[in-house]
Picture (tube, rainbow, N blue to C red):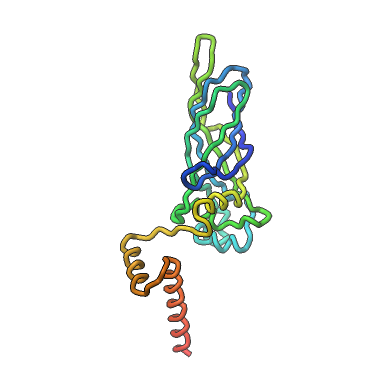
Length: 222
């Protein structure tokens, strides 16, 4: 019977894209020689146990609705499902689970993480880890095979600062918004027509023009 515990987390500095490493301790109390465990680790965010600041409430309203509805709308969010292959061990071993991340704000888990404060007293993300897979171990007649049930689980509180550091390692001071190709073409044409040096400048100009138009309309009503 295997048991699992997540003992720590950090930025995965070797990954090609944003990722965090979860330190997964696997224990086997039978004393047998485990050749390997081929695991699939499902990582979910459980937003329910966490406390939220007023600013976080406002940023998460488009995801969960108004806070007075959160008792019904706060539901687990899928973060990733990753394969893990352990080295041989007897008793216990610790492996690094690299969890890939995205800054695509159309993904619910990313919108949630982007809306959190890293400096608040509750600057952590409650994670639930669920396991399935195959266990290969030494038996009396040679290599034996067993199954890891989805009922096995572990929990971890990921610091928001670790998630943000993983993002800043690849997208320092920036985020990503996905646009339809035709909208991107229109934005590119606007940028070119106004000889704007960056995409940020193009969006800022559009926002300023919209704000100015709103002020003029309000002045006209007066």
